[in-house]
Image (cartoon, rainbow, N blue to C red; front, side, top):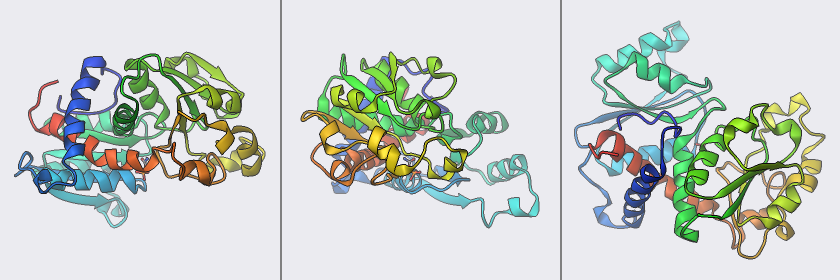
Amino acid sequence: RKNLFDLEDWDRSDFEVFLELASKHKASLDTPKRRGELLRGRTVVNLFFEPSTRTRTSFEMAEQFLGAEVINWASSGSSLSKGETLRDTAWTLKAMGIDSIVMRHGMAGFPMYLGKLLPDVSIINGGDGARSHPTQALLDLLSAYERLGSLDGVKMVVAGDVKHSRVARSVAKAFRTMGALVSFCGPRSLMPSDLGSFGVSSYRENAKDAMREARIVYLLRIQRERQDQGLFPSFEEYHRFFGASREDISEDAVVMHPGPINRGVEIASDVADGPNSLILDQVRSGVAARMAVLELCLGGEAI
Ligand code: CP
């Protein structure tokens, strides 16, 4: 596997290989051995056109832990502002001798576009438009597996702004393939018109009931920047009808969120910080998951 554009062609054995590798990396995060040589002499460019804290930082850590040369590129301050095209920017980076690009872009399909422009470079998707965020789903899977063991037959609800989320499709694919019974819930105005293509078993508008019955409650960020579109009446009302409060979470459930979180909107603070929350463990899994992805794409491991 040279590229990671999305998870569409991943089957159960691909996820199992990933989980084995990522678990090993996670166990070694606190040991001096974590600094490896696997990517020694390889150059990875982090090409982010949109803001990021978790994805960008954890990729940078993962690349350094594996011994790669790391270049952090930002669109602000680049020659794009002088009118250089994306295509010429990509060819310029390639001419310098890079081996891999980790990218985030607002345009769905941007990783495939880069892959066509640069067939000899490994392209890893850190989020494209509202289409996919494969490494987020992989790190989520790692955290859920470590906490629950098998996901076969486990009820999972993905709640909130599915329509604008780049995470929802990737998460649904990963957890569904590993046997979880995935449903969506939230306001109809925040559901995409092609909900059927996500392969989930059901949609429920009553978020409170759906959350109370689930073993995995996966909350999506309400994208505040889109609320001028009038997708729901107010943040307070969203929280009242669709947000996760303490009484909506069953005792043996786990609460997940890709971050960043809106406290008091999709999630109450005592849920985010409570004993059922996996949120910070997900962040920690992010470093190990991205080490595993870099190893699979650049390290010669076959899957
Ligand atoms: N979950 C996620 O992608 O977070 P960042 O936008 O901070 O990378």
